[in-house]
Length: 152
View (cartoon, helix red, strand yellow):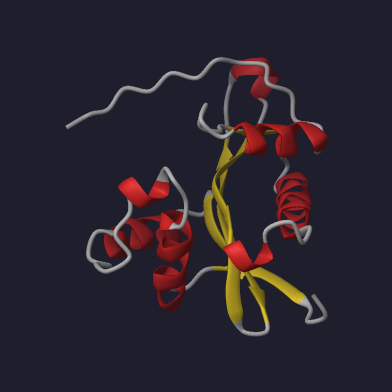
């Protein structure tokens, strides 16, 4: 890709592209609805109002080509360790294999360090073995087992 990459905080205008990227895979296609922005607008407003939350867009040539959410979590455990959580990582199908995912994760790690975080963590669905290999190549270690409980 010859055009430069910009990583920035998302705006409401980015929501359709973000939701489309979230929906553009096996798991997301069953959870997301790119035709109806109604449930995403209040969620975005809540993220935007929280200084510990960042919804990021990777943009190339004015087009959103990647996204992820970056959350800063202050804590008391581990002697007051502040950590960053990376979630909902998506790369547009046209950019997969281009190195964009690596650039996004390196940027997220740098932003986490700037925010005073001493650890970066993420979760990845058990049905995403390619993503697991990607994160391990970046130095992430599969150190924990995650559990989820759906509410409502």
